[in-house]
Image (cartoon, rainbow, N blue to C red; front, side):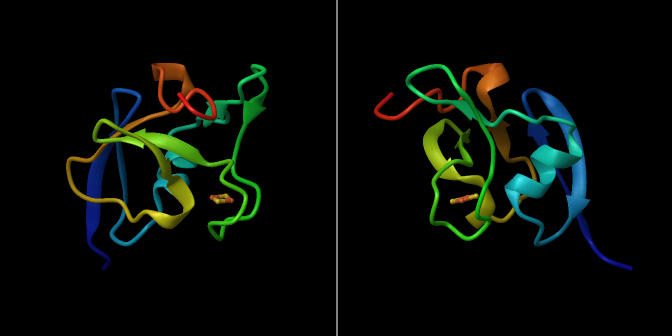
Length: 91
Ligand code: FES
């Protein structure tokens, strides 16, 4: 039996396996748009390995964190574009 952690994605509680990435938790929450580019284009993970930067979200108030490279932690607060998280480059 694997341990689970519960975090919030855009204010909604999501339980995932310990060690899962924040990107996986966001997907599990049913969120498809992680952020918007400066031109307003919807963005979501592309590479899954820390290169493309398309998965940036706000985690515990810190913008531009890479969801694909960050492990979920108990009580973590994740904000995607829907909640005003990491809206675009330089913001
Ligand atoms: S999906 Fe490419 S950096 Fe996260």
